[in-house]
Length: 315
Image 1 (cartoon, rainbow, N blue to C red):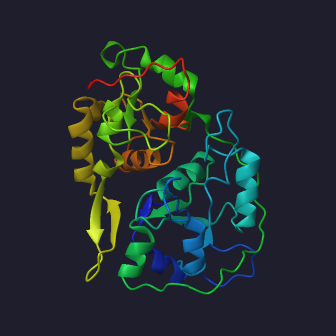
Image 2 (cartoon, helix red, strand yellow; image 1 turned 120 degrees about the vertical axis):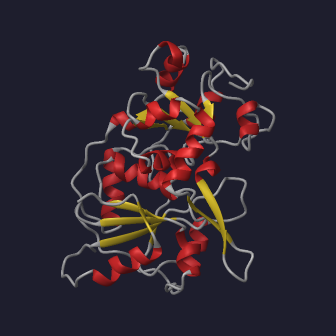
């Protein structure tokens, strides 16, 4: 039976309650707080994790569990060895059900899920609504100092290279119009439409806004809904229903949507730095799309190169 991509707080609680006692060094359910904030945000993910978390959770720093990059880009997909080391430090083994959440609701946790799935750890899910929804629905919160997991043994996995796109692949794909070849990948950009069109500045100083030729604007927020915790001003995001996800895809890419869903057109997600491209990746996987990849460098890597062609007109 396949592991669901999304879990609700009540489903996670049932998993935890059904976890049988074991003498193994590993836990059957491993919960990771994969929260991440933009570099210009005053919030610090690890500091917030230290203050409160889902009981038993550990902190996954996506900037640390990554690979170095020639342009200094953060949170690039880690090497097989780096991923293995991280799993062992978290006490995860190949049979562990890994639950990933963040403090936005849905923001960086899909990127973390993408990483686990890319390394073949299919037993992994995102907590839809993250920590805010977990807390809002009355489930317990832990505030005492986190306990370090017992180290496990994790066999070095094989990375699925087909799930990642490189700069050269993106440039090559951008030379061909979608209507001329069914093998050309549809590229969807998760940044705001203003950044896509070049009418808003990028949050990274000195980086031009705009978009890759022949790509489509699909802001990651189009796949999400915002909820407010009753009697408070705290908001968090969750994924839309499947019919709403399909409608959002159609409204942004038109007739290409059906070809993507039916597997007749490959699709690649991109964003500012490879983080919220994970939201689009997960939304597409929820729709049953099989042939979906992620441009790891995303716009920061693309626009940082002087040779890149940048467009600013609507497609």
